[in-house]
Image 1: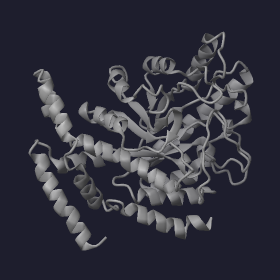
Image 2 (image 1 turned 180 degrees about the vertical axis):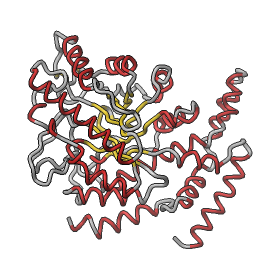
Image 3 (image 1 turned 135 degrees about the vertical axis):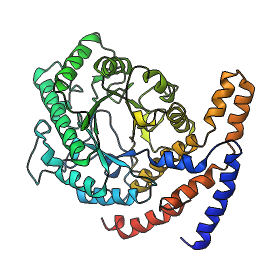
Image 4 (image 1 turned 30 degrees about the vertical axis):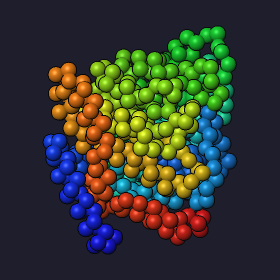
Length: 423
């Protein structure tokens, strides 16, 4: 970046800082608070939810990735290299969310109920070298034992026990990751179980799921190493009429068992917003996991854009001081565009939303609300929308030694030419 370019950013920031100070907002403090919030990037964006168990693994469980953009990561080393490029374009220090199917077994056939921390040792070593935390997910799909559409809620005890063993093993992997990196690993359970058409018995599968989860969580693990979470879903391909792990089921389970509940932005009816659920659930839960995504008409996991819901999620976290109680992860996959650009766009947008929330004059707005001056509240909220946030964001990137404005795209184009096009 040229000195002239940097000077332009610094001059714009000086004007923005003065403007925000007029409404009692300290832009330097906003940046300091934002940089302390890590985002957990999802490994599956880099290889279309493929994993590295076998070359012929097929997706199932209602998951579909569209597009065939060149340059997909084919090996763990390629995926790690791509992730390093993404991290270099993001202000702040972030994390990685890893699925169990991304194991490395040196050519040995290891079934999922046999995984151990050793099969993720290279990921752990890499994370320590990068100084990032790790999160983990059992992979309860894309396996012969999930072909029926049921896993932890299956009425086949053999299949159910297999997945229970897999989730128990996953917790041990998560604990090893947390202990090695010095940061608690969030181990999140999601299953695809459900029916395509209307069932008669909705209750028994949920009883089986509850029993399975209780068996999985029976062993107590130090929360300094591992935090357990469960994730609901409204419906999926092949489970359009009934999903065992619904919002109500998992909300009750998480509250009653004292574990984390995962709110996924794409797992609800299009008119439901997870931003409206956060403050309600925090009355009952000490911590929460968010999967930030963008549903389009259904749970299609699109790249996160800077839309109203992303702003609203960030505002809920910042206005209520929930950021230290919330684990923010991303969950989308797009193979129709450059995969590294998709990662970068989505993550930078989540960070932008958090910075924008920190630039809101929250104390003043709350005071107006207490005084029932709802006219002023609405007027100031609307005026805030045209404040010079972009100048603060550019300076935030410059200050954290990552590309400002759209210069990150130039770096990705170079990487595409030098690395991705040769795969």
